[in-house]
Amino acid sequence: MNYRFFLIIVLIALTPLFAQAQDRVFVNTYQSTTLPKGAKDIEMWNTFKAGRNYFYNRLDQRIELEVGLTDKLQTSVYINTEHTAEGAHKDTLGGIADTSMDGIFKSTLFSVSSEWKLKLSDPVANRVGSALYAEFTFAPSEIEIEGKLIMDKRTEKNVFALNLVAEYEMKFDVKKGKAEAEEEMQAEFDLAYMRMLNPRFGLGLEAREQNVFVGGKKEHSAIFGGPTLSYFGDSFFLILNASPQLANLQVNKSNPEKLDLNEFEKMQARLLIGFSF
Image (cartoon, rainbow, N blue to C red; front, side, top):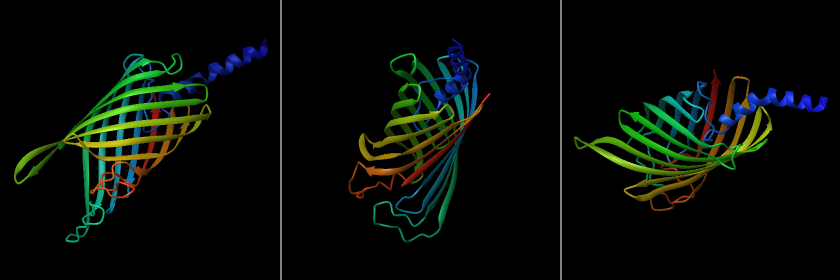
């Protein structure tokens, strides 16, 4: 009897850690769990991308304030910055380089995003957890709308997640003195698994397929994948992922190689730091 009572006390003590871990254990793949009503998180994203057919480095940073509006609905606001350094000596056609220019072009872009997530079912109490997700991004030269169908399942030590993602993007440009708008659609499939080695530490894998459509035609498609490490403190968490490009699924004249290094990068890595209050 005393042994059972001791186990109950331990489980109650660990409940906050499990609840926090359920909110987020991956960097790319979302889970259906939402923050409780009134709970708040601040998250800082750092995503590094490198390696194209020409010199290319990019650092994306996001600061997010996340708030639970109800026990099933949460919202957040992001401030985004995108820092890019790319060589003027470009090779965007897999072997045809522009040798007329030298140097490195640097740019910084700013945008804001609004995110909404509605939980439909719970990953522990129900057979499958599910949620609907929408994100709206506004920048001076582009507008993005992203939607996700989130499905996941959590057991005592295992977390599985699948995201079906669709994104619409409109970019503005000026050609020959006239403003033009270019539309682009993206479809993405995210799959992830995490093994919780203890309540504070998890080790897993994330994979995703990214597809880009222009004018209704698929122009780019690639698979990325790599390990994810998660650590959860009493009021913070750290998640780190490295995802090299594994395969080019849309080989054509513009992307003739095994990797698509015109639209995508050879390596992407993301560090996510979050604080609860």
